[in-house]
Length: 285
Image 1 (cartoon, rainbow, N blue to C red):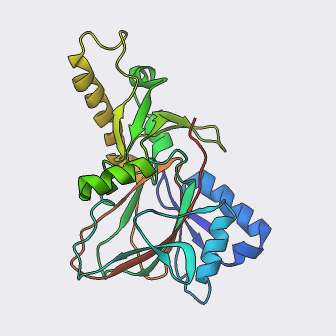
Image 2: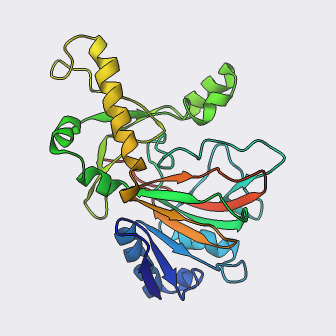
């Protein structure tokens, strides 16, 4: 297996390897796992169904942990746990992916990572971008690091995916998936790195409002909101990013604990079929 870095900040392509082999080869799996921790997102081409079956796709992801389902997106009928992210020209595209986000931060235990394969894609357009949120934290001015030390933020399913539904259904979903609180700066459980952990699912800073930061009650809305938007905007800095152009049977594997991603919806009405195995993570600290 060869590893080619795609940028100085994030991302590498794995060459001369079939991901299905790593299901049964412990040494190969450990190499890929080490590369994932180093590069944060890995890419492979030509992972066709004869080389990487849907069950092998799931089995590789399960080497990293248990698979999680999605409350809004169905699984493949032959591979429960392999989520079908299918876009059709017959229906308006779901626009929630084209925002910088980390998967499932509205859960108490957001996903550890994901293994995503393209089955069908537009001839041009529909790229996905990833950002290195460890680097985003490292590059923050020191006074900002001091300001956000110890802050926690609220992450909401109800304010994102569920927002399209009538109130009764939205409230039922909120009861099923209550908002989660996570540290603004989390520690990666395997590498010990600090990573900036706010994104499009984050609604507000929950413990900003105290006498050390706020002169009057009104300050909370302005100062806390401005700080959160500044932090969320860090993912949009190009120097922290990699952009991947999909082809059929390309695969991306990413560490959800240290990255954000953005699915670019710049393509005309057409089919875009992706299949994703998401791995259950732990509680951020």
